Image 1: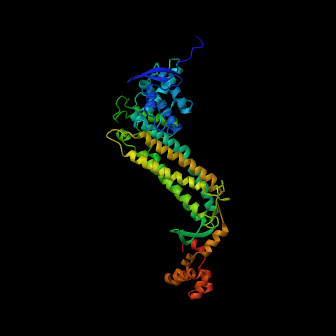
Image 2: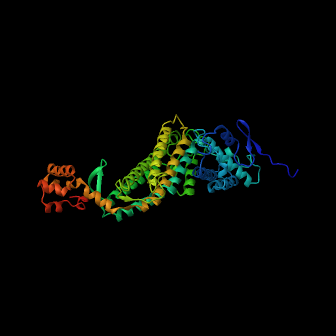
Image 3: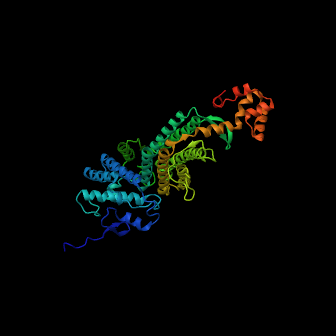
Length: 470
């Protein structure tokens, strides 16, 4: 009998009856029902570390708050806190198998967290997994909560955490790189371009400083949106009224989450809006779209400036990271640029999904929460990864190609703009048109037409001076 095989399943019960649950896992009946009922996006859209960690933070804080308010005994609080800490630390990640495409309130994911933490707490207490004693998933772990207010809180906690620890640091690193390049290349005069056509001169430093300013503005937009994520829905329970929660639970649990994370989360003033609308997540997604647009602009500028290397602009050299063609020997492509632009496209798509989902709240609940969270977190993660890769494998190695910059500058007809104050727009236009038609230099055309002396032309047409006001 000693070698008798261990049962593969145990039987747990929920409100609908008995469910067979894999014996070697900690999740319970409702999690198992979700696995069976939602085989959508399996292996592609499972919740990742940020969401699981956020659930651990929330459940730990909720237990502490309930203990402080006299809603749970100290021993139960201690067991829940221990189990929730393991969720935070990542040791129980295998116990969170659910996919994004489930109920729109995130009820199954909330119950997944409740069941795992309860069963782990039971193990810690020396009890029988699945017995719901001495810790119950609903009555104890979910005390004072509803999926309708826990999942919105998880949305905010996870998004802020990813912004703080992934995206904003990556953005800061790229900004540092580009700011250094702007200063280093401040004296390199090159031809400007508008409408993809030659324009008056700029410096390469000025060009890159524009990218830096765009990154700064995008960061400010993200930080503003982040502030909107600090109010939490907890305490609203099912419909925003706070039914079955201690009157001070919302404030107490928000304070505990703030202490746990070091982020100043607070209780949302209006729980009805916090449950039925997710404008803060929509704003965060929109801010990510703005950053995606900035990265698209920077990447495309780099792509154009580096094009060629001989038949294009060829003004900037970027690192040769890998062969660019399976048929054309020696070809190298701007692959980091292409990766960034594809990420930008995906972020735009995610934002469209988040915005549409955010418009679908009905009465006291929006039931598109999981897809909104998934889209927002994917945008954060893709942007962070793409920005870091672009920084390390493209921006840091970017250098000017001085001969080509000089050649393009000297051939430009738009240097004639410097003559406007001296001979007028129409006479300057005649010089440019003559030079273009006769394939001559501006100087030769100006002298031929007798509109400018050689001495005046050399004094007035100074590309470096044209990069400054006056």
